[in-house]
Length: 95
Image (cartoon, rainbow, N blue to C red; front, side, top):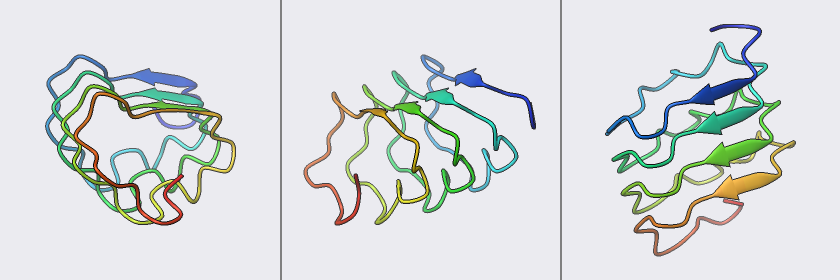
C-alpha cells in the first residue's frame, strides 16, 4: 500500500488497537476510514506522516481521549468525524 494509496477503508473490522507506525509509509493517503471499530486509544504521532490526509473518520469507536497534538501534522485535513465515541475532552491544539 505504500506510495500510491489514496483511500484506505478499515471501518467495521472490530479493530481494538493501532500499532505505532502503522500508517508511516502511506504518505499519499487522502482519506482514512477507521469508523465503527473498537478503538479505545490512538497512539501518539500515529498520523504524523499523513500530511496529505483530507478526511479522517473515527466515529463509533470507544475513544475516551486523544493524545495532545494528534492532528498537528494534518494541515490539509478538512473533514474529521469523532462522534459516537466516549470523548469527554479534546486536548489543547487537538483540532
